[in-house]
Length: 336
Image (cartoon, rainbow, N blue to C red; front, top):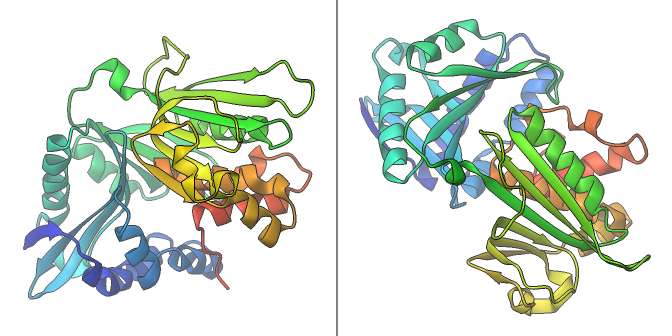
């Protein structure tokens, strides 16, 4: 058996194996649950995700075909394994250990210090196997989007300074854009996933139409300094000329036209998303800008929305549309 990095051309085969994995692991759940899970990993969906910089795919080949794979997401030196699978005929031959070993080696060279997974909590055989490989049990999520329990497991694979474990998100907007709701919801999600979380909101002196900003910090360890000097991710909804340094920028393109990245914001990279245009055309109101952006940021930092029942974290008013907007921003595919 050989391990190599996956390629877009592998996606049709990975899609087949993904279907078998879901049918096997979630055999005790309804057919509807399995259909929805599969809908998010179609051939086209996999190709799209494999084209993203943070996606990592490794495959196991034997007998001139792919017999297993590991698929995950790397953000800020933490790698989250979404799926790992080997065909039954090739189990017991060390394929999973080989997959994890090569993945760990590659990630350590990239500066990654932690691997984590969110496993089906009823799959005790897999959880026990992972413990033998050095994984430890983390938080238990009692209710996912589909109602069943999810167990976090993790393994530290390298050393990392305490400050390098801290992730920061800066959100800048105006009153009425739902920055507060978005920030609190994001903080709640990160807390439920076992992180230490700090959230600070700041308002300007204007009674109406003023600027509001949120500093959200999260880490494995207790947070000593909640003030953000440079953000890992900046979300900007407002035309304010406030300068703020950021490693990456997610911005509403309708604010500054085609020169979004020149709106007095310094970042090392950037992405343009038309939150306001989509909120109006698809959901009927710009009030859903914040939830579309929330879905986008959850995808970017590697939080799979299928892990949590986000509906329970949202206010009852407009809950269905808010949830639909989050799914849209995340690019979640409901089964149709």
